[in-house]
Image 1 (cartoon, rainbow, N blue to C red):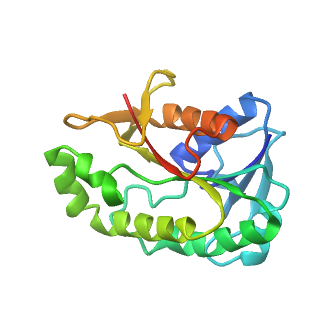
Image 2 (image 1 turned 90 degrees about the horizontal axis):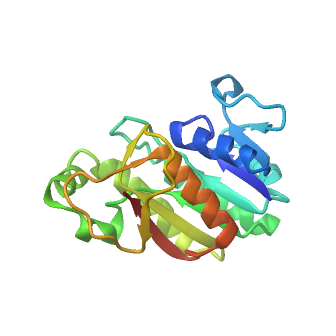
Length: 209
């Protein structure tokens, strides 16, 4: 399988890259700064560019890919700068033009309608500190929904740097309590399982322990 990863230098994206390589996939990382890649592997292909503005490089990168994975994010910042929306404004048309139809986008539990299932304390954070970041994610999702792509939106709960367990729950809606958590390693595992199986095509997938 040939996969392209946006956000490959981030903590979730790097998990996707390393686990995909361990499965024997052909992996391309689209990055602004190759020096920030934590995964060092001679099998890893690297495309350098800025997904918010380098439409030509993005178009070249998505060509011939079986799955495009976006693990883009703003890290610990509460400011979005419309990052995900601006990236999707370039990535989605590039995929459609190249005939690359499968997109897995890492979003967040609490975005859009999923906030209705959030316990009280997380819901407060979603509506205050995370309001701008979540609005950006929702705008990006709306762009993808309006396309012809076969998308999946991955909605992890609070992310941790915990180990890979392969023991987690997924569903379009999950019953959650308190401050639910999930490791980035298990999120990456689910993403690659979804890339292979396609159980959540044009669906949201909430993931939690």
